[in-house]
Picture 1 (cartoon, rainbow, N blue to C red):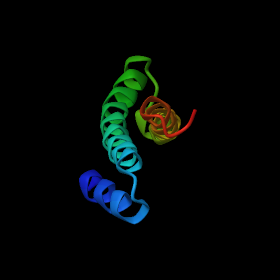
Picture 2 (picture 1 turned 45 degrees about the vertical axis):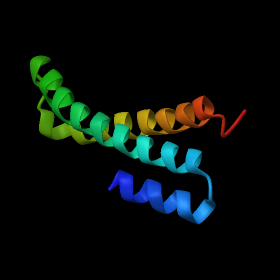
Picture 3 (picture 1 turned 180 degrees about the horizontal axis):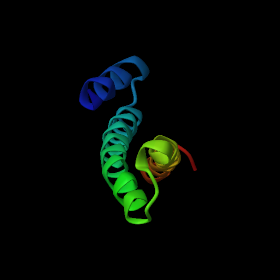
Length: 82
């Protein structure tokens, strides 16, 4: 899906850097969500906290904040913003 969206963004806006940033940011966000979705409940369980109560909040917070940072970081690295 990230590849398709990256290509569509490249075609629509005529900037392959933007398509690359969008595609890589989506891919990284999916990977971060997967890792957080595994590690957060396991960590909460280790601390004797019921993972069903607060896992979703921590996973959402991690995915949103890290996805935002990855997107902006890639934009800076590719030179889209200066």
